[in-house]
Length: 111
Length: 117
Image (cartoon, rainbow over all chains, first blue to last red; front, side, top):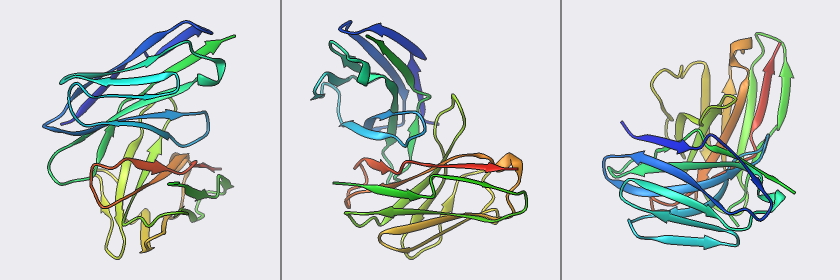
């Protein structure tokens, strides 16, 4: 069974204080790993897809990296508007489109 | 691009009522849509996968007669919660798969907060 574990569950940063969120996964052959951002009372907003170990993607202050066992979401010089819950999800090979989500990391950036 | 609209965003109704939730892909065609349920401080739990023109595939433990899914067009899927009871109160979110490749990201609607009194 595919599993996704995200840490920490919650993270509080000062504005400008860089940090990383972790997503550890167990999957029978990775087809894709996805990062989403979710604001309270809203649906997840797509950020990145990573397909193979060593791959990196960047968007503004966010950078996602992937190894064979985990992914990191690096946040550089965060701003209060980066406050949200960040979700990680994995999709296994096998011809089925289902993805498995982690619980997420709730990030709060304080001015 | 890749906008998914979900309606209504919030509904309160009496126990025993049936509630229909719509999920539309506004700027792309979605052969496959998904329905999730999310409880506070928990991950998104997949309820069913909806394919246009065919019966939905339900996850283990999800009552298909309770949660009716219809995907009659490439831009619309509906979830009907039949004879809803307080334990059905939750946050329901739909997503749509953009593109023919199965490893493309899902794009989500903004969810429906369902409260059964």
